[in-house]
Length: 295
Image 1 (spheres, rainbow, N blue to C red):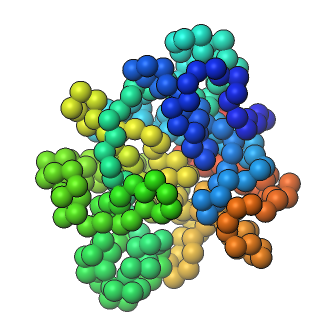
Image 2 (cartoon, rainbow, N blue to C red):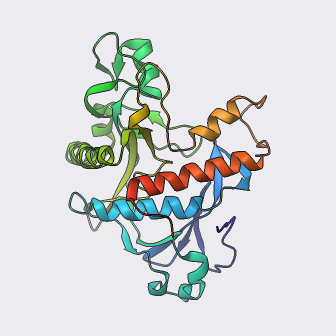
């Protein structure tokens, strides 16, 4: 079991420090390192979740490879021995939780695809009978399968929450050709991976991607089909009309909802059993999705 809170052992320029990931600038490429920090409701906790970084990184690596027939990605290598600029010296610390990737000119949209009625789509449906501004059948329940998977983009907010936009607004933002390619690619990725997930006993309810360009060509970057960017549900336990059993931070979020906490910094202390259960959920997600045990 390994835990990593930070990456101070790397003395290269920091490109960006996220809630969970530290990204280093290697000139025309980047090193992405996934720590074991966890955030919920946009607040980062003091406690770490053992192996979480390895799970997230390894799941992304698995899917980048699995979907390269649909779209190229930004991965150069996930093997620390191959990393440049003396980084191979930290192979032990970086193994399983890092990626050497190409720099990508990112597009200013989050590409969300929904196959089931949950989250902000459920809120919109309950308020207006629509999802992404499109009329849905009447009488749908929480967790119901949508008539067809839907592409519902949002803008990337630097601060606070992302804002859902219509397809037309996306066209205004990035142009017709790119918007169509994003929509087509997002739906193709969802189709392939949700079909595969079902064979593993999981429903992929929704997920989000980030795309960009390298030399003018569309690529997928950031993370892919992880429990942090997707809702995976247990197929055997699936029943519309209620919240589903999921393999992500949902367990932690539900526990936090029982506290008298206003969801702002500082975060409450996480007891040992909550840390262990959350870690187990992440490891189980890896095992179920890839069919392998975490190294």
